[in-house]
Length: 65
Image (cartoon, rainbow, N blue to C red; front, side, top):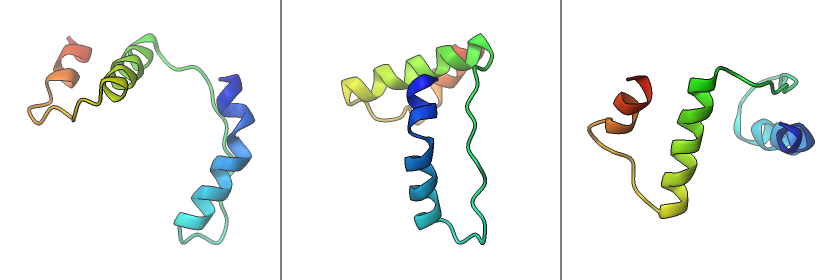
């Protein structure tokens, strides 16, 4: 959370460059439910391995069950 909070101005500038909005909202980060954290960990592991997204959505089924 500290890293995201430290990068929020950077992220906001990049969002402003990509989005066609008159005003870019402030960004705030907070911890979510444990299941969301597990899903994030699963996605990060997949990225580190260079594994493409499961077409059948198997990771989502595992995270919810």
